[in-house]
Length: 140
Image 1: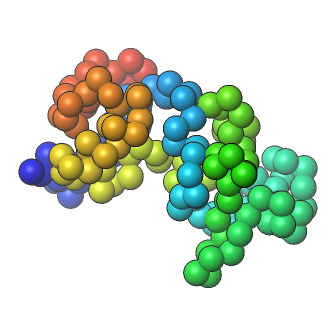
Image 2 (image 1 turned 45 degrees about the vertical axis):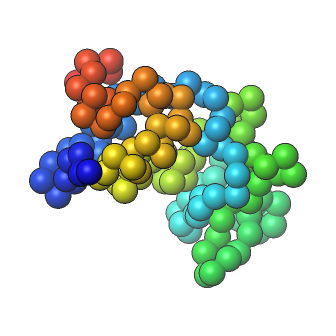
């Protein structure tokens, strides 16, 4: 079941992000996911951590399929997750900034349910329409 079309309403993605209130549960920071980094993000995070790019890559990343990914600690969480909070929040990579609103999550109910079941910030909302119809708490 299609819920909305990003093509017919490109503002959906930004509205979803603007409305989101993270519960800082840390669930999204668990698991070896697809947190890949651009060269700009590698540079930005390295500088933020006061590390050379080489040190940052060696300590926190892995190369896979031609891309650089942040790998997880032995407990399965991102190296930069501490008690549900991101220690590099100011410079976190695009996939982290977008979660839980990757475009496919906003295009059909099954994908919405996947996001909703893994993110307490979305749990109260049964559909994307219900989520988007909430009063914008950030004043837009």
